[in-house]
View 1 (tube, rainbow, N blue to C red):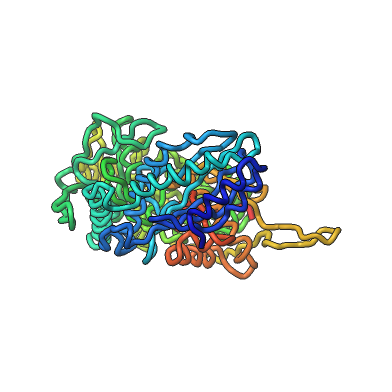
View 2 (view 1 turned 90 degrees about the vertical axis):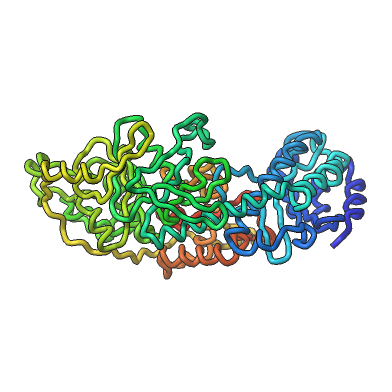
Length: 570
């Protein structure tokens, strides 16, 4: 390890040289209050910026040990510090001038949810912050004085103000950590009270707009129906009340624009913790909950969809079903089976985004088309079995078909954004309008032994004898997709995937599996559960190909890992 004075001398020695001379700066340098590591230097000022990390000892940072004592508090503190650092570097980004990305200083931009990110990590000894800097140049000639400004003037200020407890608002830090502990308490209570979800009184569910996840101003605060209201005594906030959604089959109904889909959206994102002031801080859903929808055209490989689809006219075996171009009903059937494999205990569905013929068949259609002529067993006839025989609850938004009232354990009507428990009224009406079901085939748990195979990594020789790097390449296209080599993995319909950094992590995980685990011997389930174990014990750093992992990755849930792997056209 060298000193900061060594870095300063090296900087001055490369001034006005061609841009590749910057690569000599790669290394580790001790500053007064932290250690600076230049992990990767960009090839030119127009390329992706250089990867930088800073390490501060926990003793120097001065945070109370209780604020990073376990995974919950550590994740909350890391999220808080990343937000603080983002605010600081935004004051200085591009204040150093030059060509291309010269002067850029950037770190992960956090949304309303709390995610584990590579941007900030806390070990048992230190805080590690990772970020990007665009090394300045004029054209492709090094402008060292501008980089000197960044590393010796701007960065020390940012680090001091973002990562040292004495310089932060102690009340805000405490609030972030205590909120996370309260949220973790509610998640444990869901299990103990046999609840699928909880929505606190006073929550603000609507968002500012379709492209903003900020809470809507002047919106109607949530108020639980008295019959569903429960109370909890949180470790820090104290007593809190709200609507407990019991396990089983819950139906959310109401007129158009009365808040049905808004409630469902809040529940689907309740698998994540939210920051203070979001309005959804105390909207907590079972962490394994999975939002499902139809996906016309999606890829399906070797999935047992016989629970929902059987006796196809072409005699195709639906116990090991594959297609390059699934229909809406087939894709939704596959999604449910894949969700069962991923260990989901709650399914979230909206009738608006579901395949109609997959969800329900009315009495008139049943009388016209005989049972033996219809390959699809609708979800209506399977939801009860899913709960009673597989332990999977359903929360369903319905707006057009009354058939779902007959299978619901709980019915919530959204009336001008306020929930009303109409379960008893609905059950009485159901007796007046009996439902004719044609009788679903016997329920049996789907089986999966899908082997993952794809092109493995290799470093082969060209004809001239030189080595050729055949490692798979990743290119992330925002939140909704990425390329693995030339093959696109479409994630548009994973509605609980909320951050581009999660998509980037999914690309790394799939790449790692393709290069190291897809040997034709391991099932997808075995591979995904191995990766999930490694993530939870080692973090995303276990995917690092070199000596470092960069900023720009966030932890996905195991449900999204399964969904990603299942959509890879291997």
